[in-house]
Amino acid sequence: MKSNFHRVGNRAAYTGISPVLSCARRLACLGGIAMLLAGCRLDMHIQPKYLPDEPSTFFDDGRSDRPVVPGTVARGQLHTDELLYTGKENGVVADKFPFPMTREDLERGRERYNIYCTPCHDYTGGGQGMIVQRGFPPPPSLHLESLRKAPAGHYFEVITNGFGSMYSYASRVEPEDRWRIAAYIRALQLSQHATMQDVPENERSKLTEQNAGNVPGHAAGQP
Ligand code: HEC
Image (cartoon, rainbow, N blue to C red):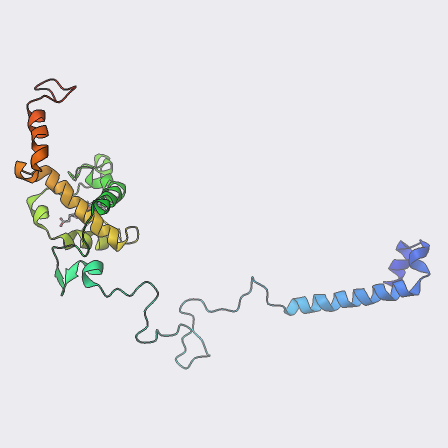
């Protein structure tokens, strides 16, 4: 070190002045200690931790994962409402909704249905979605009598667990939205099976006009 300083410092400032030199020595020494210590330091890239299912000698049972304390519930997972979270009541698939369906709920249901279900079930529920047109096995029409009669909870279950070759949408559609989709499917079903009695009286004349071909822009008898 000393000789280095002499060589580098043919300049007077380094050679002759001993306080500077001793200070530099001390710094070099400290630096050395710091480097030694750095060797022992636990850095972020070597974190002391257990990976899932790794054994441990610390706990008597030899496991590093600790068992859940009985009665504890993870945040957001206290699902006490059976109907809302399973579509069932006392273990039986229910034909009702866990909350009243407003217009906003139906619109949200339509939006979710259009995003998640139309690729296969298509916009009308007929089962001729774009993926089916490209070769995916066609789902049944949602207007089949058996499906029109299926309880609302059945739709909740199908979205939650999947059905046959249809996979589960539980990770993408929240429970409340599953019910909104189920309600929208009911609306779709009604759209294909409604009678004149289902139409509010003050709206009926519009339909009669349409049937007579009197809608502006449409000539009679043409689609
Ligand atoms: C990737 C295509 C695909 C998507 C997307 C899809 N489905 Fe299906 N769905 C199917 C197929 C295929 C079947 C028939 C499965 C079988 O019988 O094996 C089916 C069956 C069903 C059935 C009938 C169950 C029964 O009792 O017969 C319902 C109801 C249904 N789907 C609802 C939905 C809803 C609601 C969504 C949107 C959240 C959805 N599906 C998204 C392909 C799809």
